[in-house]
Length: 353
Image (tube, rainbow, N blue to C red; front, side, top):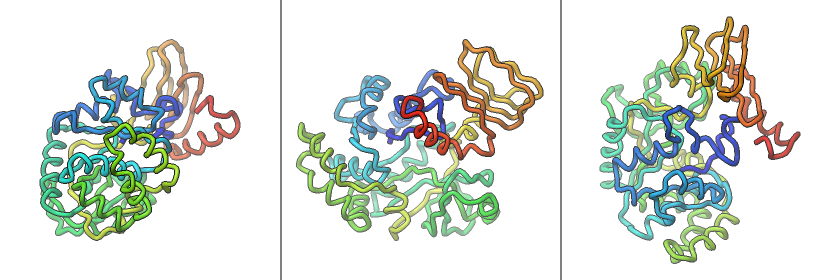
């Protein structure tokens, strides 16, 4: 899934070039390229489909030139993850009704790729032999309020990649509740990575989101043909916007979770990015050739190489300049960045977002 706009990474991430197409980590590869290469080690690259907004199709093929045009699914409108997954599931099922699927966002960090591959192979084997919907949960290491949580029906066995039934899903909690979750040992971070058979997810969509499923089912004869793009436009015009979590996973009774640990982060915020970068002696993460710091600590700073920047007296701040836009924000208030983007759009139009 590569269609998001990454508004919490504004101003680095813009509508014209969202974060999944950026080399945020300074590795020389975008997050999308890293994700594709990671999955190509698990399955043949011709079996990887990328669902993105139709305005990013050229960006996808530019960054992954070996991919076939038929593997890039362009969504005409942003309608959240349930339609995105329904589109992919029906297209894949039209080619192979017995297929099993891994659904992964394109903007995650996974540091231990071999452990990730082991978890995926175990999960795919599990869903191939059942009608279960499987999600990956990450063992929490801190009371993070930026993630959703999954409560497991567990006997507190800490076996890696253990699969258990899901008890409840919880959206991003308060700090106090997150601390309670961490202490209980019953909760995992919701990684937004799913595995299931094509038949199982289509059946779940039919039961819990029948309106959406019918729209994609009605154009089954157009998949993998020259008529597909035209049919999908009509589907998306009628399709409601809803997440797969709210629309299916929180309602279905056949949902399981695999408790895993492979160095995961969803890289959803500057704070999560800060945790994965090297720090100076004052715990600042700095990107930029001419940044001078005085009496500043625990800051995330990203500046163009041609800019000379002098900062004094900042603690726990985000300071980012990109393409003529400067953001200065307390790290503790980074969840407000989406509101900043909305306000900027209202006051200045689309040119800065």
